Image 1: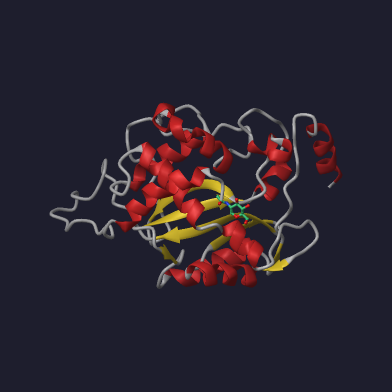
Image 2: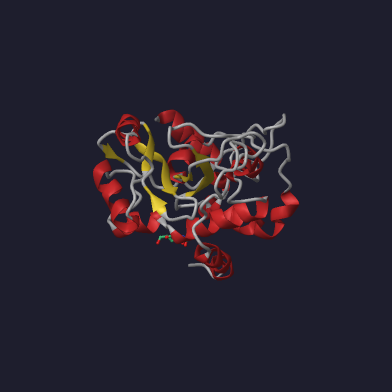
Length: 271
Ligand SMILES: *[C@@H]1O[C@H](CO)[C@@H](O)[C@H](O)[C@H]1NC(C)=O
């Protein structure tokens, strides 16, 4: 683990040691809502696989993590932490306040490394216009994590800590699922490796036969849980199977730099 994690891990341990966040008994239907939104049921930690995303790189810009040459990420990186409902829907854009980069300035280095945007396109914000990847994730999803998180800083710090604690890249590597442009791996084997490590079922999203995203799900106290519960589970298994074939690949990260872009583009065209 990089030295950076030692000071980051401490706050989450304190947080995790706190009693499970059982919402207070509802005095009225609005007692646990925030800006009129019903309180969410669970968290989904969405991770992205750079080897799949970065193949699509068509242009480079300073914020595109795919464009860092040999420093481009070769591990699962963070997409976001999404509050979800058990019925498969989710709340979004839950507060009127906008993203403030100053609130998380002390986390910027860590976020650039572990939570990079993997394209140059600017996602839309909740109150009009477009912004950074982080602004989009906070406004669209983070604001709906109330009452677990009441501010931006807590949200981003906790996402980093949960990501450090549940290292999917290392679980897959240890099970022999290493990045490769030639190997195909059984989807069931990948799911089992994660279930064995964390005692909860993930959800996997593919682009053709390449793993593109992987979701890990958590209760509100950050204990792992299945990404689908009870009657939802059948739907969810269908979803994973619909998205991914039986054998999937985990493509190696391409090393795109400002200089390398030209040749990358021609490689892509050749495909
Ligand atoms: C996760 O595991 C991988 C592979 O062992 C390692 O390279 C990486 O640094 C780990 N990530 C974190 C955030 O600890």
